[in-house]
Length: 219
Image 1 (cartoon, rainbow, N blue to C red):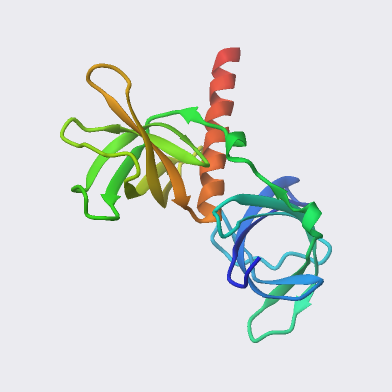
Image 2 (tube, rainbow, N blue to C red):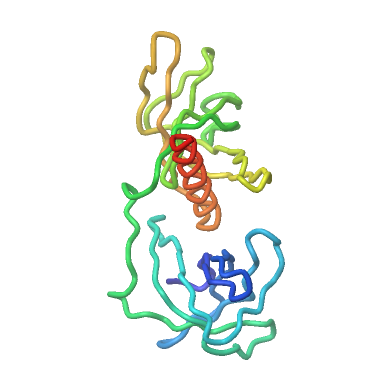
């Protein structure tokens, strides 16, 4: 893990007894610790000084954009020019890879704006057919033609359960073009560059939608 790597932290709030999410980045490291800047609360966007001995779940993307996760805890304050915290650095075997096939994929229509990274097509707006933490399928407008292997940037609008609209920007690669029916084509896009914080927002959105669907089935 390199200095500058962005992390997502998840910790139990003892007051609410709910898991809260934060994001931060690695500013230094040694054989025993990772030193991070003050975590930013995902919902409030405020800096948070997590108490010592707070147990945390840490998620990050490696250089190949593969998600990894490990358990750790806040052990001390760092001595730097900016406020920092030190977390225990786990052994390599304690860092687990999160396989893309384990991402929850849900069928849902959310707004997305698409731009070419190679100036191969004009920007366009459309909606998704499905989405997961590893990629997205988008409905192609009738006047748009994409090719397999094409690189693009997608800005996705996620309407969260809280009522907040979260904007996610990711670079992706078209891996497949298929026909949903005679009039609609779908482009399957895998994410090739996605901030770990944004990826966790997508995963959270997918779980929320999955939970809503289950609740409707029980009604």
